[in-house]
Image 1 (cartoon, rainbow, N blue to C red):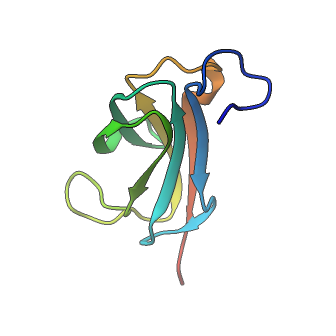
Image 2 (cartoon, one colour; image 1 turned 135 degrees about the vertical axis):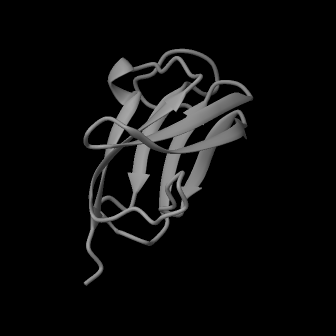
Length: 109
């Protein structure tokens, strides 16, 4: 339940990162985070230039949550190899530094 070193109730809002990282372009990436309470969240994925390239909305549950990103961009194309960032909106994180995380996609060739 509780995360070591984090004050509060049973769970805290913590972004746990992505797995695998680095990942191969065109394969699923799992984004993990915990929530102190059930609430709506939006994951926004950005390219290295800071442009939003994908968005995933979900009703998050109290405790551990996972969102699978299949690498699909908002325009329907697949993400290419490169550096991407993602942020989970709608959450006040215990550690502000955990709001945005970096993902690296490698070429599958």
